[in-house]
Image 1 (spheres, rainbow, N blue to C red):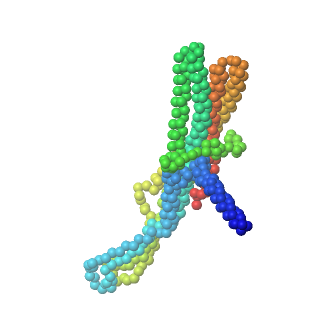
Image 2 (image 1 turned 60 degrees about the horizontal axis):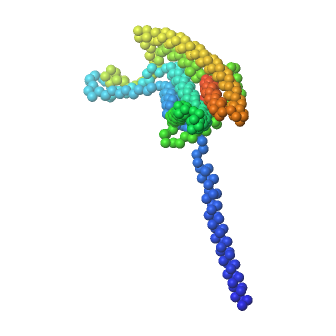
Image 3 (image 1 turned 120 degrees about the vertical axis):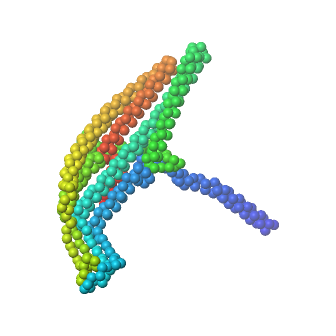
Length: 448
């Protein structure tokens, strides 16, 4: 009997143990998907800010690639100029199937060989290499100018998208106010205190606001498509933008500066300076072409013109055109005239850069004043809205409170417009100062 009880107790223990194990396995099966969820969420792509988009554009933009390839072409030209330090060697051979027989001729060969160096001028090669290097520097500056303009366009689109996103939020709140107004008017019509025309007016106001919201959505889609084009992204690739962070990166917020104390940094002006230097070397090259060129040769005797001579002969000399219609002299005068022209163009370009800089700084200051005024108007509208709410709680009609709320939202929309004007003006100043492109691209990376 005792043995039977012991066996029953043991069986019940086993059953409890198996039941507990099954419950534990069931709980683990429920916990495992939950634990995997953060990992799955971590695989979702993060939002793209301005810096990330710039990195994509530098790697994939066709416009940036085209100007970068121009640098490679100029570097190949440099290598060609370096090879000019080695003289060009020409091999000439002549074969005579039938030679005239001459008495006493000891030259029985029916061919001649001539290895010659013609018109070798190392000074021209030296200054030509200097010119090629200047052209490479111009290609680098032109590439940086293309990048600067591309970054300015991308920053412009980012700022406009950020403003449109905030305007869309204001538009939603305006639409909600309009719906409340329409609902209120319909109730008045039911009570006989308003006409159906007032309902139509309220409904039309809501329709206008919906149309404005659709316009904002279309503008956002167009700006995103422009960003795709500039960055070289394919149409099917997702583009989820981190607009608030992108605005801070575009404007370089958090960096105190006084734009009135800075100078413009124009790649165009620097290219004009290189053009002046380039033209001065062109004048030197034109003068060097007035000098004679070196020639040298190793040759065998001509079996037709020479008799009784054998072996190889070495010769060295100078080549100097005596008369070419004074073309080389006129070329010196031409290059000097071109230098005067380049200097005039450079002065005009520098003046234009300074004018654009002053205009951009003045526009930024005016935009800052307009933004501050709009902020004051928003604060005044907010106070009036609060005043209307208190009056509504005291028994005044709802439309007055709704009108005050609508007025405050309209002022907020105007403030957003003034703020984006200020941001765009700051972007223009930052681009002209060279700060925008220097934040993402170093000129040293492109120079040898």
